[in-house]
Length: 157
Image (cartoon, one colour):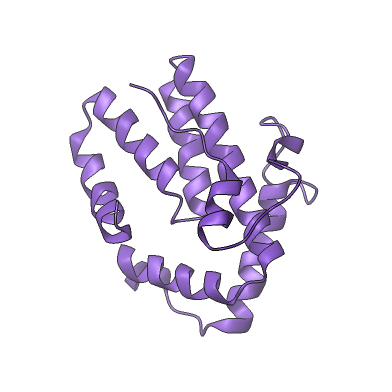
């Protein structure tokens, strides 16, 4: 089974924008600490938290369904600037691609970890969602595929 390598260009172009300069998301390494303020994931999480605080009243996360979470993300996405969208898409795609590398090395545990990190940043990253389904199918963990397939269906895939 072949996994999907993400490309931020395709996500931005599908929204009607053109990103010049090619895929620049490979600047940081997989070994960087998620909690370092220089790490792109830390910056993106901070960016998303600040954006959410400015634009949406707080709700307890445990009471939000998977579809409400997607809708909330999409509403925030629609309000973001192009550069914010590009940064999020690039980092999510970078993490997806690291997950694909781990999958190709038969390291499914780390592959799943990175696909989940990509989805944490960008819950609508269909490449990472599809790759998770592939991993869970390979492992025979079909019950874990069900919610992901519902999300993919909700997104139109």
